[in-house]
Image (tube, rainbow over all chains, first blue to last red; front, side, top):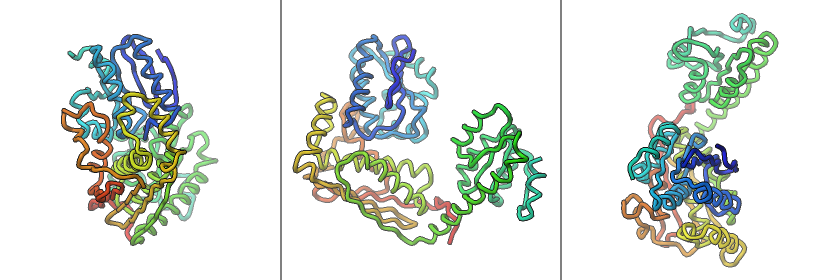
Length: 125
Length: 288
């Protein structure tokens, strides 16, 4: 179910998984429109009762530290409630960035959305 | 039919491949000025051929012949890098004109690429105000210069772009506006409000970002200086240390150091020099 379509983050909900699809890279969170969208994404965690998050990067060839921070902030929100985060459809460059930042050690990096959904639903806490 | 139409042009020399795989073998020996390909082929189909040629021989344009009802494929082909497409139903009317148009554009590109291979060095300088919207455009400009000079290929261009973006964003928010990453963690709205406030408040609003770029066929040196107080980069926590994994900040510098060959801060910490060297064999341009 597509819950909200925005300029930066497309947000969908599949059972208790929030699927966030960034539509473009972010250089910073200093823009009011971006912050508004970002807060909408965070609100979905409380309003719709989702526990887990999947980031789908099929639109992006790469991203930088701000996107990593966005993912980290969401993960810190869901983790206390035993939520899990997985990433999917990353390009070669994006996979390298996840590896460099060591986030691939805590978030599964999957080849498809289905695989990512499977990870968050089956991965032990 | 395609061959018949093209052979009528007296100045064009036509060579044929049975399928996309053979076309790629032929390209390895010598590159034509243009490729016209069908979509459905064994071994390597039209879209795969478009993608491969774009990657390996970016100066060779590809025109895809499309059949009726395959507009989606045409769009896909253009996104993959095809120069144009020509519907089968209109070949007799359109193909020659399409080929002529593509050849004209690609000829200009080839000449431009040859000229750039003769360039020995290029310098440019920018002084930016604290407008974040300028950063993507500047990054794009510098990426283009570096790639045109032969310092980086498409993959390295992406990495260089990430590093430059991180350095410029740091210069603006952490340097000139003196805003910490931690505020994003606690209160996003306060973060935006503080950015807005300082963007119009002296002394922050009066500060500038100075960028100089020196490019040669072997190396790109980009220096970015902000007018803030600076910082001590040695005190940045190592974001790859598991202890710091949940810490915001520090990853921008990590990406800069990974994607550039050298990252050098001045003593004050308000100036960073990023150096990218050409790997041997990355220069795609025809030699001068």
